[in-house]
Length: 281
Image (cartoon, rainbow, N blue to C red; front, top):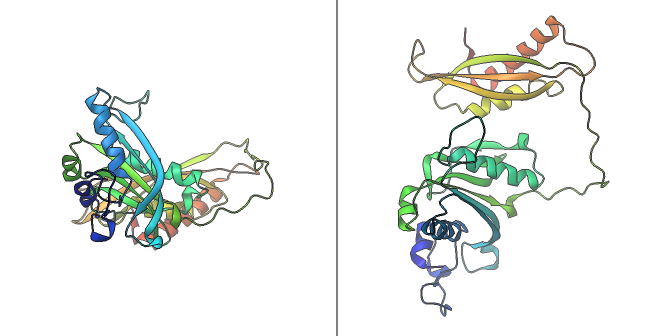
């Protein structure tokens, strides 16, 4: 790839420069797959196809040693975000990239519940509109909007969202004992939904509340979804309110009021312990 493009993605060091390239402008080994995909977006846009959704699985290089080669699955979206009947057309954003990255990781055998979201991402992503997905303390994917300076350097009109899944960082997929799918066990009982709002510090991620709530009672809590984030009003400086809805699914009998209150108490205790937040009255 051209060395000026490689420089935008932390490459073009002496170890990545080719001594005898097949073309004078393809003088560097690629430090990332994203430049190739972004260049394809530019070519599509030049031909009137502004909405693109492209991906590639292949190697990228941090140096010239064998251990410096890594296999990565990367993808980009440009133009408008995925169409949906309930919303007007909009530009792609970081959440599109995150959804694509999670879908890729799930296809690799990683359950979504095992992933944690962190705000750190490489410099070619837009700060505040990007992040990483981690297993424990180990990053397995990056996602977000590409940095405007990177897009300008590649002559690409933004916004463009992208993701990179670090395939070599993923744990090996466990072999299945049977080719048959797992038994689908659906309850005929009505699920119960309960809303919670916690006051937490500005630096507390919503994902940490959701993770704590879902772990409070894994046997009956099937989902937890954030629906509101509020600042100002009567909240103290540096604090925010995060509200989320939790779905409880009974399996053998309809929940009693006492059982629901008991599960709710577990959720409040788990979230408070994990985040230091307090239930908003």
